[in-house]
Image (cartoon, rainbow, N blue to C red):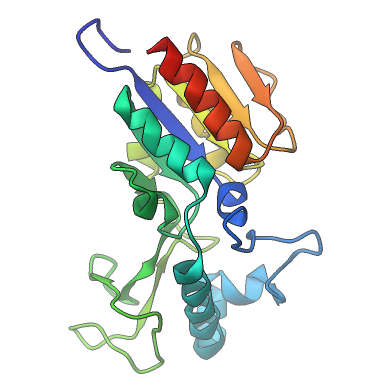
Length: 235
């Protein structure tokens, strides 16, 4: 928790809902498909082993869509909070809209769309210059490149860091996530029990076991600016 000489810390968990308002498809539609594909066919290590061309092309298309999207009012309101608070964003999203909006501290739990990495050596990660990874494109040690995305069934390497941030928060915000995908959904449980928690989503997630809950049943583009204005007025 903050001392009188420190800025208070706001930790924000963001999900697909905030990116959807910039025009990016949410991870899973009501029919269980993602852009016409079963998740099992494009977002698992087994899918990549079975049909690497399909998986690479799927993410190539996602990059093109993400590059065309623009940060929205929700992203920008989180940046505005940095005027008065230490703000750490923990995102389940793989796009770079938070960074492009101007947020200075972003933890990508599920990887980054605009990075590639070696299929053999996890630490060989490359910032991409274009939007495509091709079959036959190799890392410096001669192994196929893949998206630097945490697929279903893979470890979430930055989860411990996110837990450490949540445990030292003075305010916790949840934006645009159903709190259904673990381990990210459990992050709120590591926040100190006494702090206020703001849940901003048109569909209220099932979170009732905490005190000091504030539900804002609105999209990120209106709900986040509203909460940000309130917090800035209190700073």
